[in-house]
Image (cartoon, rainbow, N blue to C red; front, side, top):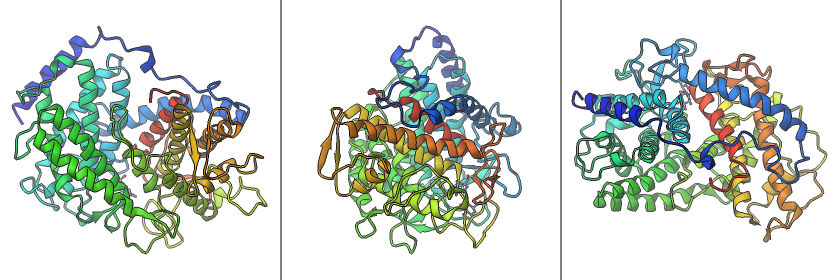
Length: 527
Ligand code: NOJ
Ligand code: NOJ
């Protein structure tokens, strides 16, 4: 460890020295909003206009509040070790004042994106400091003996959460959880790429002592953070573990999707570091994983299922999250499996939304249809139909909608709109037809299966507009239940709509920011 501190200091100095001469191409700056980008802009314009102002304000507040839970600098983590991300400042009822590997990696992937937007922005040095501290701390956590195991056999990397100060959490828990190392590797790989874009001269593939070798180094046994995580994923992905909701032991869609992406992008990174043997091995696992994830499609049910051989319906917002977090990075040439615009994800989203709409009283109001087919409208979405966790404990009457799940539905729709705009092509299949019928709802346009539509068809534009406006409806549900000061907890009450569960949940802010990013990107073909 001691030797790493000066290295990171050097990295800071270099970062500061080079922070200013870099200008970011205009094309990479975020577009302010998508007003006027669409074609049939009339649909739902009033909602879009009134939502725009709130989103802009909430985007700033969400980032501020997210950073309050991240050390160094966060006001909720003043005494906490640098690089730590707490799940929520709530220390009791419920106690979320821990570092979850998953929550931290997902949250910091949002910070990496902001850093990558403009590595010479005013915020960039602070974010880069957080990411460097995070990397150092993860190295330490990886080597901390814990109830899942140790570093030596890598099993310890499956430990889902640590105390805020970095000590192991020794209470009983649903462990191991095998999504954490994959998510952490993905976040750090994105950081390496972003850092490399602005500091190309620092890139070395010979494994010398440099900023990069803390993150990736070919030597075995693995001693760099990313390589240790990739080794873990490559050796353990086919073993059962607990799901991201920490409740069910088994094989899970979300976990497999992020593992597959980690193996694919890990192979690319290994190759960039001339670690060819590892690249082949990770590729082989990625291939096996891409076959394995097909097992989650249930033909009889007509949607994906989150856990294999489970009594549950399988409908779960983890399907949406798996698609979003499993989506190849923008620089990757991998063909996506189950991306947001895939039929399998879209019909699963429809089935989940239909369930949640009827399940939660607060969702009942907006729907008014005599038709006998479903109409897709934005509503509050929870984790899964059978959920009984109410944010504090168990309630047999059932769960509640979650901010991060509702945001993930919006993000899937926005990304689908972007995809269609950029490809100018939509083939509606038998599988996808129910989704497009529900999306167009009572509109007079009737989608047909086995038909390909493009920009010369009115229905093509209408589908894109409906994707945007329905995504906005989900964000509008979030607006309705977010406190006046912009605070977002974990859940909002199924009956009263008031926030409940851990307050200021870091992941709620991260998921909202990701959805808003996807909203801004709509209509751009470079993403
Ligand atoms: C039970 C919940 O269902 C689970 O998701 C959560 O992580 C734990 N309680 C801890 O709050
Ligand atoms: C409960 C959620 O189910 C789990 O996914 C999350 O990691 C923890 N809370 C902490 O936010």
